[in-house]
Image 1 (tube, rainbow, N blue to C red):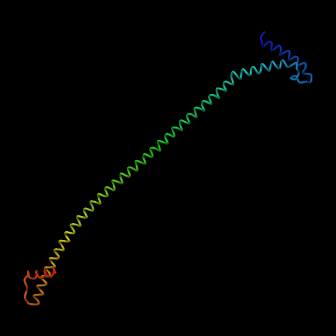
Image 2: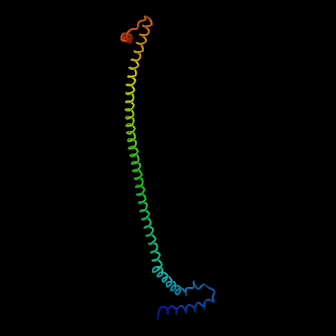
Length: 187
């Protein structure tokens, strides 16, 4: 006989007994005559539930929890990798920015020195040109002074001849008038 036949026979007998006592006014769960069948079904039910939970549900739940834990760990690893890459990118950006600033300052300093040198060369060329013009002007002024001095001496000698001629009615020679003007101008 199989276990199901035994259980059904025992359950049928229990049902008939319960039907007979159902008319009595007590709680059948608390009647000690029903405890063996209740314990039997309790063991069967909890055994089936234990087998179902241990064989099906708990491994599936454990697998889901483990999968979730693995996924969270992978996500954290990936986030830390992204953070490291972002920090590397930031440091590379800051380094390239510092290099660009240094290069710009170097270019500015080089351009400034080239401009200063070009200005100094232009100023030297301008100073040399001005010096030449001043020297040329000094020569022209000296020539003009000499020419003016000669013209003044000529005019003075002509004036002295005219005055002497007007005073004594006699005209002195040009050389005598020039000697007299030279003697007066040197004194």
